[in-house]
Length: 297
Length: 281
Image (cartoon, rainbow over all chains, first blue to last red; front, side, top):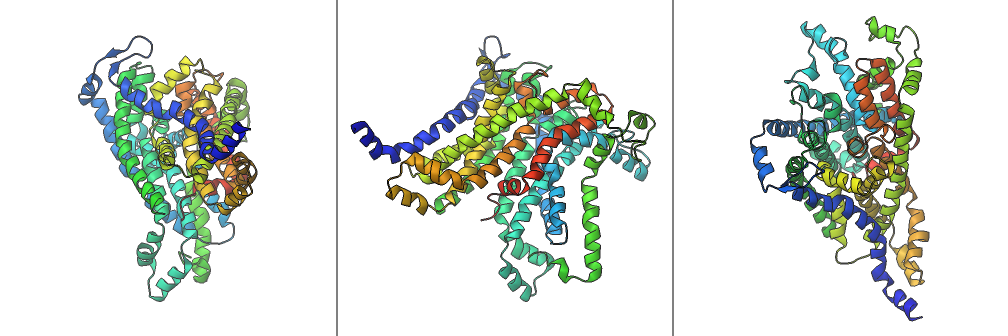
């Protein structure tokens, strides 16, 4: 009797924790704790099997003189900058498609299609598109300039070639965000602006884009995360080559820690910590904004 | 509506627009169409340099070849074995966490919520070494459940964000009325909130299905043999063996892409509703 009555009295206080516990436990074990473990491992020399040797900042000092690290880092910056192109491009396509002609729903879903496909498959598709001697793009360049370019075998172009492949699904994703956003733009404001003589670019810049802010925020978030997570395409299209020129930090980390090139868990963890630090700059920004939105309400 | 509806434009412009959309779509999907056509091209066409013309015949044997001479069937089965439990697990966990974070007010509520949100953004590589180590120690390396367990845990971050915001948008009066009636909290969850969550559960299920089916990184980190590898990792290793046999690479790619594509077309409304949650206020 007393047990059940104390449960009744306290259940509003205890219930949230009962609902939360399974989720929190799983998330702590597989996500939160490993972040700190990785930071810890980055101070060791460890092959993943034998004993760990504490080397303090040794791995980080080695990073400073590692040319491959700088190449990866530089490529990450290029990824981040060029990936942002997905945001205006997605907006343009969304505006182009925001009509109600017959079959439009079908067209929209086909435009969105690339996002549903695995990046492994996207990578293979673009490898075929770029393939020397018979790839569609190779042929096109050959036709225009008289000489084809093997994009994925040329260290000047390879990173750009992979980024273009990544942009394909990313633009599709941003497009769908903006299509939804455009659907919810207040029609009376557009009408009012039209009466004031606003149209075209002015209308877009002063009336539409401010109203699309929530969509833009999400588009920027997913694009930054997408750019920094670029692993699949690099792995499938070039395996980091030629001569490591298309590596990014996420790929280089994997290569060092878990591939035929070695099992240097400590060094890999140090690279991951650097990538995490870059990502944290953005994550803190997003969280700060979301936190403000939550507490303002 | 922005831009101005095309119906208000001149007849020529309308006509141009109805032509422009399919042309743009064709160009947009060119890499995909190229691969789809190549997957039906006989090997002899490729040897003769016929890369872009019509295939001389409809070579469906490429697909049979992929199924008979590679573990493709096995890979696809493995993908289902990882994906389906992950969808169920992550959605179930996040129904509960989302409910707790949306309905109850307690001091650490927002901190816990933002732990899930922030964790969902971290780069996979920062988790790689410890998660792989943990999976090996639990004896789950190279098993479908080792991979699924990680995915459930990681996806619960995004799913919690999604579910919590969805439940927040439900009318809170329903819950207050039930409490006044003395309904137990777990009954409120099970009989009042859960039925209202159906659209969110559907949206989240298709999204998580696609994310997990398309995952490549964790598949390569946590599995290693054709007996357990999902289709993304399998396709990548087959690609290494099929050097320049593009008709097979293409057929394999189309097969690997099929399930999420079918899922997308079957559940399109839910899929897009899920992806764009938060894009409007």
